[in-house]
Amino acid sequence: QVQVVESGGGLVQAGGSLSLSCTVSGLRFDAYVMGWFRQAPGKEREGVSCIRLDGGGYYVDSVKGRFTISRDNAKNTLYLQMNSLQPEDTAMYYCAANEVCTKDGILLGTRVYWGQGTQVTVSS
Image (cartoon, rainbow, N blue to C red):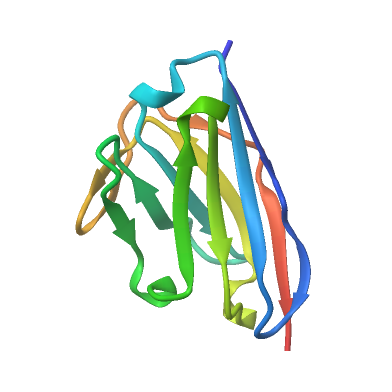
């Protein structure tokens, strides 16, 4: 059984930082493309960032230069370091395994493993 568990969300003031973590069990972590998505109230889910097995990846334009995705295969953990947070970054952030990560975006296949999400709230 695959389990995807996010942590690290919280409330932060604009300009602050948060670091999200996502721990995966039940699959061979180092064989899967990983990514972060977010969904704000009333908005569609958005692909924020993804990281391929070769370390390359993608960032949505709105977070480029502020967010950094990384992975530690020895710990089966995905990270998202978020700096210079803005109120528009407020959303539920989800970790996902087994998507397709291109230089232009994230594509969802038929079997993507999702976490329950962690809330990020940025106050102005």
